Structures are given as structure tokens and as C-alpha cells.
Image (cartoon, rainbow, N blue to C red; front, side):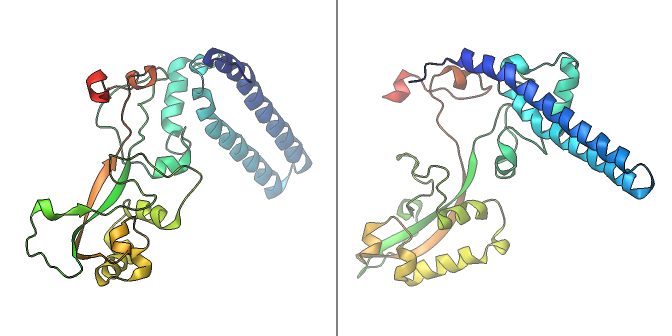
Length: 260
């Protein structure tokens, strides 16, 4: 059983990561110098020099998120803290602590302002989701009213939906249909014709399409869908009263009354 505290992990990261990055830079630089010396003249030498410079730049940019793993690495001995903060902000679009995938699929900038201990904006963990709502009737009945009370949210097996149940999807599990629904929420309906076709199929009662829903009565053909509409929501996790949550500016913290 490992018994390491956060302080122990920070110490290991602070001692090893800078050394690893500097050694990688040194090895790349030495290899580049050897290539340049081997091809001193002509375009070959210029090409080798360019490749070396690009490799060194890529290593520096991609290594920046590593220095955010521990608060003790927010400054380096050969760089001023303000200079390092500027480099992080300029490279965050290319290299981010959550990776390019997380950077591409967020809901945008936080609606609140604040800077954390590393001089960076707080992380954004919310995600957009399309929620399909329907008017569901008995197989032998009909409803003429379309008031707000008649619309019910359609549940899916893996996609985030009702806030009264915990999320079922856990990475790296990526159910194909729910994954495509997530990306559809990031674009426009003109670029997701399959979603329009999906809605048309559930209105027609196609069994194979209805089976994608987590609606037992619809799957058993005890009820049917009369009308469908789509809503776009932003989903975020509830902030429990922890040290991590309290460090996020503007976060709504649950108190004891909310737990009950």
C-alpha cells in the first residue's frame, strides 16, 4: 500500500520533472548540432538547423503544463516569474494542462474572473449537452396540449441527462452514439444531419433507434413519442465543500443544508 501525501508527490515532481525536461532539451540540442556540423553547407545545413529549432520549441511548449503540476514549480531559477507566466499564457492555446482535446471541447471562458496560484485562469470543466425532450403518450391515446408540463426529458444510457442521477460514462469508455451527441452540441445542426435523421426515426417509432434510449416503456412499445424538441444546456459538477472547490473563484459551494 502506497502512503504518499500530496506534499510527497509535489517534492518528487519538483525534483524530477525539471531535470527530465532539461536533459531532453540538451540531448535534442546536441543531436541537432551534430546534424548541422555534418551538413554545414547548402540547404541541407539550413534544413537541419531549422529542424533542430522546431524540435526545441515543441519540447518547451509541450513541457509547460508539466510545471503546473506542483505549486513549487511556478518559477524557474533562470526565468523571472512574470516571464514564465507570460510564456504559459501565450502557449496555453497550443499546449494545455487538460490537453488539446479538453481545450477544444470546453464551453468557453469562465463567466467569472480570477487568477490561481500559478497566475492562470481557473480551469473550466463544464461541457455542453443537447437534451432531447418529448411529449410521450400512450400507444392508443393522444395529447393535443403542448404546455411546458407535457414535455419530458428523454434519457440515454450513457449521455449526461437528468441531474438526479450520477454520470454513467467513465473515461476511456466512449459509447459511439453518446460521443457523437456531445460533438453535435459543439457545432450547428447543418453539420449534424444525422441528428435530424435520428429525431425523425424516433418519431416514426423505429425499434432499432428507440433501443438507443434508456426509456423502458418506449422500448416495450407501451408508449410512443408524439413530438420532440432539443435544448442546449451546460453541465458542470456540483462543488462540494472541499479545499479544491474553495480555491476556484466564483464557485458555488454546497453547505450542509444542500446535502440534506
